[in-house]
Length: 418
Image 1: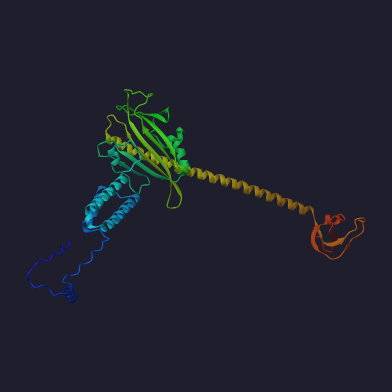
Image 2 (image 1 turned 120 degrees about the horizontal axis):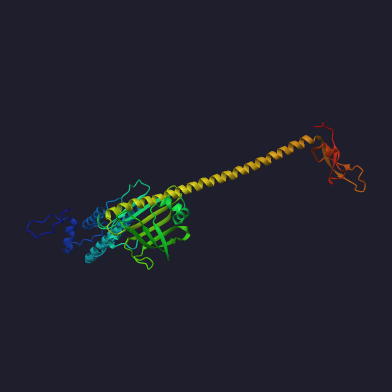
């Protein structure tokens, strides 16, 4: 650090030589001019900059995972807001140093809190405070098209919350139709872990799962609600646990667990400009009982990845099959159209061939203007000049009715017969 400037002390030693301008001023007034007040600095001071760097380092150490684009934008916003506040506080009078430092500290705390919340944000509503504040930890590779995270207060404290997302090339409507389908064959193709489901009314159902010996059965009472976003922008299905229900008494041969799941389907435009469907699953399934937590977490991770990946694959396969079927139907329609046009062309060609075979074209006919007396049809009309010429069949030329054309009269012209 740069040492602080030393203050002048009284001494009997001769002082330094004064500048001529200073000497003139001192001789004139006897007092040196007061220097102007320092201009407010646009950059934070060293203590403030060290505080900013320490806060940034603390945040980076708390969240070592690579940040997504949204977190980068949030950090950039916090940095700019902090810099703007520092510039504003530097322009304040020195008497307000305590509020200035207090405001800066509050801003840094708020920024760190906002970034921490963005790293741990979840849409589940029944989680404990420890689960909500725990950060998401990725347990899949970034290059994997299927991304998965887990959040857990401590390694062995409780069941982990899971989040899995995948991008499907199928449209949103097709994916939601597959998800909401009640066909057992379709359900078995993407969710092989379904248990016995009994509808209780009011969007409430009880799900029962059989476990191998010596573990007891698990049952979950959940209330599911579906939300369709306006303009077909997305679909959500949220299932919240219900601990008691009058139609489902507690039984000694089963354990009642707790489960909250949320499925979200949204349209997303890819880098190639096409529309994709983002499938996102968030959930926590606590079977309770004597099952070890680490076994539950490991099974939950594998099960959630398998279910979400299977739904995405089924949607892609169904969409490709429908596109191929649509292409085949269009090709079949075009084939029928071309066949029909070819048949018509062949029939017309045969018709012209037969007409040419049975009709011989004779000499050319001059059609000339005429004046015709209708009272004497046998009298040849008077002609002035030729106006048109075209070949006509010999039969028509020899049997042309007199006066059939009111404006022209056929007259044979010499020429070889074809």
